[in-house]
Length: 306
Image (tube, rainbow, N blue to C red):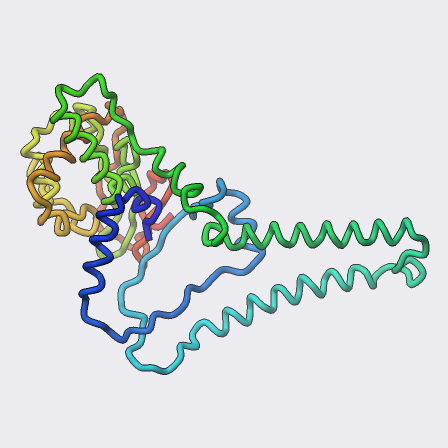
């Protein structure tokens, strides 16, 4: 759920979406609760990535509806919950065994100073456990303000130079375009500066990278006309006539955007600084591609599922 970008939604637009959702026909489709990795691997994985977002290396999607239309409770997550609880028990048992492993006469302190040190040690373990629990819950911890997580993500989106605005109308179009660039999650694939290169691998579609849409005339789309950019957004056709894969470029969803929004988005894209980065060409499906649709959050120029 790209709420980091949707955090930029204006109140009126957010309320409008909420109002529309209220009109949808009720559907009984019980969705299973989210599953997690184990405690140890989750904490280690997050400590090796910038907090508080702790973005994963890849995001994987699987086709199909995994909900159920009946009223019976969903028990698919129980085995994993049992395993996670077992990890907590093992960690707790490890602390107890560590205490009992020492000589009997040294297991418990005999002097007041020793009891003070023991209490301080227990308090330290408690604080450490709390910190690890917070890291384990991130970024879903309810006590972390969403602004703390969303701000650094939205800060990566290019801010236009006001001195380049031709007039007030052009300034309004560019800023409207930046707003659309943010909430439509364009930056999620093309990155905040438009350099692209986000990799996706999936057996039916092959390996592809999001394109460089900066203003570079060769490796970007600086040489494209406004009409060519509009056609790519709405019809999924590049300037040279190549069809853009619909599961890479969301042109099927963008085909109903109104003229004002498309023109505003183009006006903003024109402000993206030129970045001389050549993105690899799409690769046809091969045995090396991922069975599940996988998106790499970081840089990866290797074709296939690696």
